[in-house]
Image (cartoon, rainbow over all chains, first blue to last red; front, side):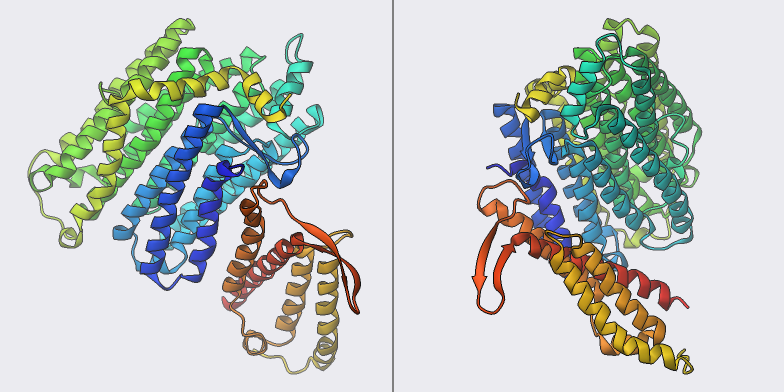
Length: 495
Length: 141
């Protein structure tokens, strides 16, 4: 089927439109959203299988041939991310049923939720740099609504900051695309890549280095790398747990994906930009870890861990050899799963205790052993304890770092694992051990039902780690396409 | 609050409204081969309704046009997605549209496009979104 790769975008879009009609019928909304979410997962799985057997898939929308029309491209990297996104979206949806509240549900929560997924899947799938901007906007507009929905004081305050940061970075994005267009005269990403290759025989022209750095700023703002992560701890602190899980698992990863895509496809001629990326990645790790250790608020601890993970992944990308890229792809998927799981678990803890301040929480494991042990496993997976999923990715990234003779960076990644483990164990030791307490809102929290969603994610993440041997061929295929742009270019332009 | 002293504006609007509305339909249908289309047509229609809003007040306008603009947006979205997804049935790439020349009595030779249906969706979305925004801001007073 020609249109297979657009289904993970089309299904949520269609669902979103239908859900607007159903805004007062909560049960109907839930049913429709669940069915469509399952369909998206299946469609994304079919895309992966097709890419596995037939190589990179491309679709020339509206029958305009590349590079003149808009092209959608699914290589293994984007197919895997779309699949992971669909799973995370499905699980967060399950969690929303029990936690988000009727006020949200009546005000188009599920519709906007689906539009967010349209934006994320679209950004992963598109093969056109301006279309990437469009999907970024779809994603951002939905995220504005999700962030502000509920209208508490902190949400309104943080929405303004978030809006301001993203409007500015979107403007920069368009400017960067315009610069790039004026140099290479095309917007199709495969075509851009081949043209940059043509003019970079004696090294990449200086203007392209400038554009590369501009893209780094734009995507770095979305992806929250050092020093552009300043907006994130505040903004991500505001929304309710399932929205926070979606943001933490997906939105920053879209930025990371875009950096990876543009740098490996366009700017691989100039290793200095990769050097810059490497330095920023390492600084992100260091500052993220400092934040994660310093805070006594469970939300903030996990939010700062996003910055660490972004740093680790981009460090893997910046080394640009087979091992490190494989590790980066592996770790990226791991991080999407485990961050969503952790944020949902934090949501469960907050629904029991009514606070996210670690100093007011203790002894949870006495009455909620299931919650405690799920959190424990998720924490180990985050830090990268074998055989859980964080281990393989970090191992490959560190190994790639040694191969690329970047010893300091590899050492910092290793050290960061230890401190990440410390930061989450701090939550475990202080929050789950110790004296049992009673909390005001405890009676109302449907803990067992809320736990279903994070448990699913933790199980998937554990299987992802244990079964890494059988998943590795997929990851390797993704890494091969990233390292050899010709595969991508030939699939799109069909030369 | 209705300002009763705007006799000139009120009289003019009663006539002008129909011209603007008609012209927006013309702009919309001209869209495929000439400048125009669903977006600008929708904006113009929304402009006509806004003019009505300025002249009278929200209650009067709701009385004249009892339309839920959010639902209108959703209908428009369904139109646009539906026409684009129609190509899925024929296994053609997404958004591919079909067209043909038809001879109709009275109207003469016509070129009919499925793109018009897509544009109609855009038209509804633009009217719906613009009016939702303006009404939401207007109600705050």
